[in-house]
Length: 129
Image (cartoon, rainbow, N blue to C red; front, side, top):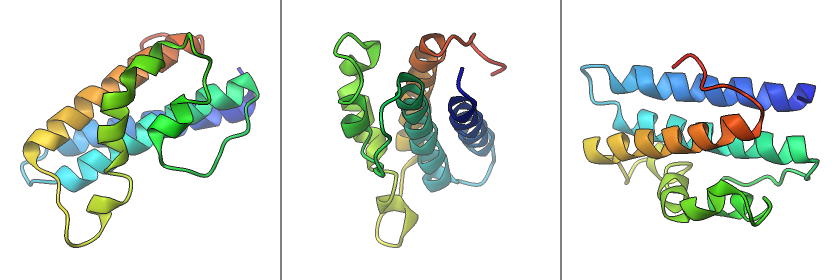
């Protein structure tokens, strides 16, 4: 694995672990959970692109990132979840929009699906979570 790919993976894992930890708190931190889930998915996708030698665009649009992967990628079927997660990159970070408990739970599921699809493609095991 390329050194920079490994850095993307470390950052993606940190966001995933942060989301899981925040989801377990008594205080409702749904916005933060959703944001870290989106960030984890984004960084895992960017790790795949980096490993494949594809230039990584500056975007939070997860569907756009997946479109840069080969058509046979198992992530091509994740568009519904990726569109859902993309909403949490910016919108809920500012006043006017807030994530619900249900959205936080869905974000965790989708982030987990992205993580579980990306790790084997990068030659990694299931990880420590």
